[in-house]
Image (tube, rainbow, N blue to C red):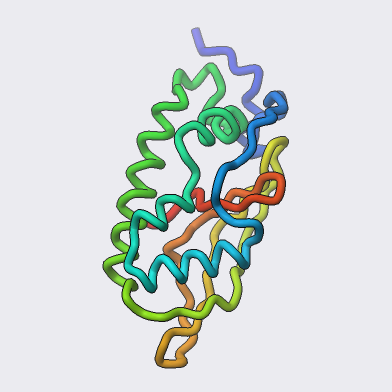
Length: 164
């Protein structure tokens, strides 16, 4: 007998429509996309992967704010937030470490973010398929795709996903 999935339309929509409203804020991060871009540039200048990780969503934020709105959290999938977090945490840790090693130690001027997609959820907004445009210390404009997504909630911006 096939499983009954009353929320199957959430896969098409890209979000669950019955997600509860949450009050928990994002902690840390930055007050704007521009400020987040500047903070990322500062962390890269210092070659500081830990500072980059502090700009990323935490496990509690993922669990309490983000997970319950994603289609993967539907009961029919059998997945728990920990399953999603394990994948995301590895991606964030390896991504921030790799980019610190690859790009760290240089001065970068943040110019802008370009987003291919902005999705509104009940409790947050997700800026996806990002390109971060910077000027390096040799004056050359660089376009980075390692920072894949940023979450926005009530005037706070944090890294949601990186290239791993």
